Amino acid sequence: MILKRMIPVVLTIFWLAVVAWQYLEHRRVVADGRTALRNRGHDIANTLAVVIRSQRFFGGVVFQPRLEAALLELVQSEDFKSVMLFNAYGEIVCSAGDISISDLDSLIEAGERWDKNSVWMVNLVDLEVESPLEEMDTPTLILQENDRGILHRMRPPPPEPGPYEENESLSPSRELTDGSIASATPPGENRGRRERNWPGPRIRRPRGMDEEEYQSLVEKAGLHGFAIEMFTKQYDLANQKDIWLRIPIVASTLVALLGFGLAWRSLVHSSDLQVRLVRANEMNAHLRRMNLAAAGLAHETRNPLNLVRGLAQVIARDTGSRPDTRNQALQITEEVDQVTAQLNEFINYSKPCEPKPTPVDLAAVVGDVEQALLSDLDDKKIGLKVEIPEMAIEADESLLRQVLFNLLLNAVQAVDDGGLIWVKFGQEKGQEPFLEIRDNGPGVPEENQSKIFQPYFTTRQHGTGLGLAVVSQIVLAHGWEIRYVPSDDRGAVFHISGFKVLPKGNQNDG
Image (cartoon, rainbow, N blue to C red; front, side, top):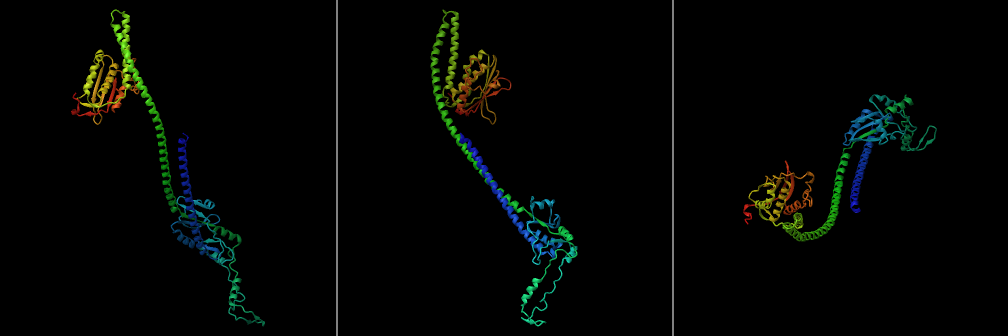
């Protein structure tokens, strides 16, 4: 029992583990895709840094129109959507592409933002690196074309000639004006000394511009950082493809586990059924033995009852007996007849019902049953209307006779004096042939309609409750179907279907 309850739990845990595994694997693929996209962003940022450095003039100046033209060439790539350069105040000083950002400050603070179809990356590289022509760092300034005066003011002054600048091709030694001999200096040494003495553009601000004004220019026009926007179409397609690859794994695992669970359930159910079947067979064998014992007892009981009935009839006919004695003898006879009828019904119900179908003339069988009940019909002046065509059905004649006798007797007992009973055989279009026994009696209450075919259920005072149970047993043994149909007006209708109608040539002439 514990294993039976644990199997569904174990299967559910296993499936959830598979789902969690696939989810983690998908998250890993998503993380790898984002890492690849960030690496691609770093590559684009390095290219962008090279472009910006190539646009720098003296003092790190870059003119916006020329820079935007260069940036537009970069934006033409498939996965590069837009770029924007901003100053220390978070204001855009240069851009290219379709800029759809609304809150630049939050983007700069976050450093990265993933939108529906694109991703923003901020400050991927440092552009403030040392220039090959400058000894000191200078910020990159993005100016307009009308700011060329600032560039002119930032140009460094020309260098003064070095001590050996006039004669670079002197001989290895020469006489100086004071009579001393100068040591030989190769031309290469002169050039090296000249380069080492070159002062370089050490000016950090334009001439005539104080430090405060220069710092204000750097804050407004200086490049503080940049942000690039890249398309995520390929990234999204890869994620969707990965999801669609993992859904069949999860679904197939679920189907396999459900199949295993159903197989296990069927196995357990089959084992339970086998146990129940063994117990049912044992119970049936015990009931059969009890049934045979009860039937034998009932059969043996009829003999002494017949003896009692015979003696009671003798006493009732004896004219020398007192009147009260003869009346008591008649009562004994009636009681014995009732007990005998109950024993007969019990014996009929307990006997194995094994029909032997033969062609039977239904109208003739109904006529025989009518003759057997003629005295009962006459006593209550009940009319019997039979609507059966000349035809034959396949049935066990003795068992069919017992079915009709019990149903008609039940109807005779149910209707009042002067009542009416119908026996009708017919076949509606597209349906099986049927036989109906209908009466205009009180009918069966709704609460009892599902119980009338149960053994020992009866609503009559002297009823045995076995008549309709025997009918149901015989009908089912033939493979037919019987059901109670409430009448539209009043009375009861017993509907039997499933008959096999035979051609006229197969009727039993005997």
